Length: 231
Ligand SMILES: Cc1cc2nc3c(=O)[nH]c(=O)nc-3n(C[C@H](O)[C@H](O)[C@H](O)COP(=O)(O)O)c2cc1C
Image 1 (spheres, rainbow, N blue to C red):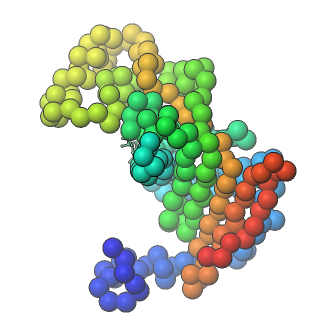
Image 2: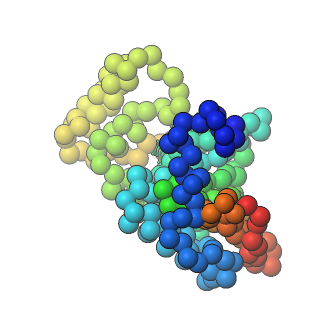
């Protein structure tokens, strides 16, 4: 745990602080960069492309925050599999812990932590199931092994041992001609996509001396409003 900037911190942990803002960024992130409809899409797409080009690991990974029926929060990483004006799409088990959370409270946050680029983008908003057509379009492009594993997994439910899990996956695979077979693997009945429909979007850019740039877009009945936030 970080307790300050002084002693007790392994030397490598502080590197990011010292590097912040020293990465050649010449322009300050500014609310005027946010344009178009919706105004977050163009800049987000540019930053995602730059994360891909920078070859950072899993550039489309995002930390998804949900709350359960009691209001207790939980986070985990999922992969963003679609971005357009309508929102941010990911795929998962509808009956997983996160799926149950989202059934109880259909609101979520996602954060793209592009630490190596000293950038972060954060979205919040309501979530909805994507259409079955959208789920199928993604599912039938997944590798067969991923399909079979998803079909075999009651995501977030306990199972005894690793061999139990492998036996369960093998039994499911067997029904469809095995992992090397060619019978179509159907979409699991409790699996599909969620779309987060952004109502708050925040872009964060690290700068020197922790005087970081934060620009937040908020959607209300009269449209989008951008504001600079103190770091
Ligand atoms: C890099 C990375 C990507 C992941 N992508 C997904 C994903 O797209 N969908 C998914 O259901 N789980 C994904 N996971 C696993 C989740 O983090 C999580 O363990 C799982 O979805 C169960 O979460 P839950 O019990 O909170 O529902 C990913 C994990 C990592 C580390």
